[in-house]
Image (cartoon, rainbow, N blue to C red; front, side, top):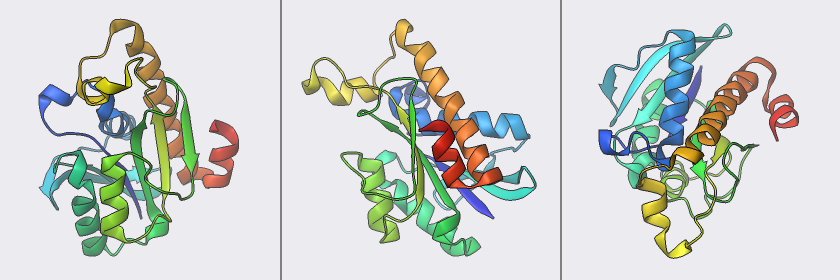
Length: 185
């Protein structure tokens, strides 16, 4: 069983921000595979279903970004999911909009949600799909950039990024992370 987690912030005000690329990708996966994300437990919203014959849990932590790891840790412990079956999807300012990067492991960088995940799980050795959101021109406005409104000209690129992230997750499940990395990185 895979646990596929999209990082984001729970309130409607954040739903169409750069910081919610993980949630947006989870929503696309859920729609494609008919998985309802309606269960409310483990500090998150989740649903259970199948992708390409593999049982999966899709999770959107509801703790706000900076505490995302708490939700992931609880669900991993309850369902006894191995760390090798975890895939985390999140936004990345160091990658251009519309581009994704897949990694087998690695540090959290400057991403507070990933810092929480690494801290709570006590490891960096889990798969992740990073969805590029780009860097703002004025780096002093970073918080406003990631949680503020998205300019019309950027929406299409970000939509492409979440589409690619969805396809990358499916490829990881179908054929493994190495093939997914070769195809999408």
